[in-house]
Amino acid sequence: MQAKIKVKLKQNSYDIIVGINIINKTGDLIKSLIKGKRILIVSNKKIFKLYGNILLQSLKKYYDCSVFLIGDGEKYKNIHTLLSIFNKCAEIRLDRNCGIAALGGGVVGDIAGFAASTYMRGINLIHIPTSLVAQADSSIGGKTGIDLKAGKNLVGSFYQPRIVITDISLLSTLPEVEFKNGLTEVIKYGIIMDAPFFYFLKRNLEKIKKRDKKVLFYMVKKSIQNKVKIVEKDEKETSGLRAILNYGHTIGHAIESAGGYKLYKHGEAVAIGIYIAALIAYKMKICSKATFIEQKQILKLFNLIKPLKKIKISDILKKIIIDKKAINDKIRFILTKKIGYVSFIQNIDLNLIKRGLEEYNNYFFTDRDTID
Ligand SMILES: NC(=O)c1ccc[n+]([C@@H]2O[C@H](COP(=O)([O-])OP(=O)(O)OC[C@H]3O[C@@H](n4cnc5c(N)ncnc54)[C@H](O)[C@@H]3O)[C@@H](O)[C@H]2O)c1
Ligand SMILES: [Zn+2]
Image (tube, rainbow, N blue to C red):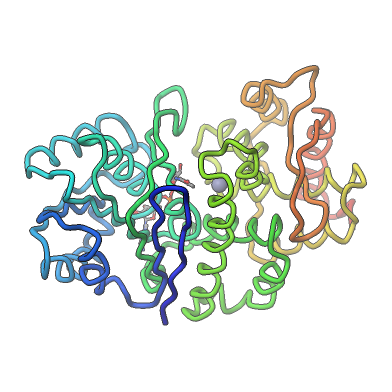
């Protein structure tokens, strides 16, 4: 089972190959694209132990391979790790015809991508995403980067890979919490732009939870196609269209940040953000009650939402104000009209967000669900 999704850009178009058990074809898939002799695989210890050998076997047919392993986790997506990747590139004498293969989740993909975009002003990049976040989201669209103490992803570039090789079978070893993290972004595509996909996800709940490979193949393929559609129209986030991918993220980012990036994973925080965005749209009569309930239900079915335990609503609001530079207590916000219909951006009163957060808390702290 294999599909090719073309990413058509003004310059540097490329293919995303999605399939089941295709990691062992990596060498064959890249040999016509990368003419140099050497490939540097960037990964982390955990992932390399699982999939490093199979990748090496496949690449060794055509290339001299070196491996550089970074620490596991967001805290390693920093300038020190980046510098160590640059030094490794220099040590093994990578040149512009050679390439970096990023084998890992979004952390590896973002930092290895940034290294590839800047080393010698840009060398070939191959993404081999291993987490659901990386397969359905971060390996698509060319955003690369690292974090600073002052904030996440503050330094980076737009840099397209030569190819993305997305092997669904790698998801079988992904921890449950990481799988759920990616599911939020997958569901987001259904809500913002693809109603049939939204209902597909709902219908296939059990198979997705059991990680049925055929269902995951379709789920990841559709997610990629949806993101590609947006990236093709707004590659560098200049027209505003790409911003709809941030549905649920304004509140989500604020929750993540108010929790010190420890209490909530990105996907959990965004799931709460989606719930509240849907609630606000309903309260503003932008969507029907049914549209709100449908979003709430799917998040509940996939077990994606949890209470806002230790975080104060006032802290979340403060983060939103700082992040969004609120003018007269109004902020730009993405709201859905209908499942699958392009969301639009409105000026939202901060009070509405506050009430949304309070109602979300009531939903957990009382038995009574005030909305349905
Ligand atoms: N560039 C973009 O457009 C974009 C989009 C979304 C997120 N991101 C970035 O992506 C990062 C988050 O990515 P992530 O959620 O993949 O986190 P991650 O890279 O930290 O991976 C999550 C965890 O899963 C492990 N893992 C990954 N694949 C595995 C597998 N197949 N089997 C077993 N374990 C596996 C990793 O080692 C890690 O411990 C963040 O830094 C975020 O900023 C970037
Ligand atoms: Zn996200």
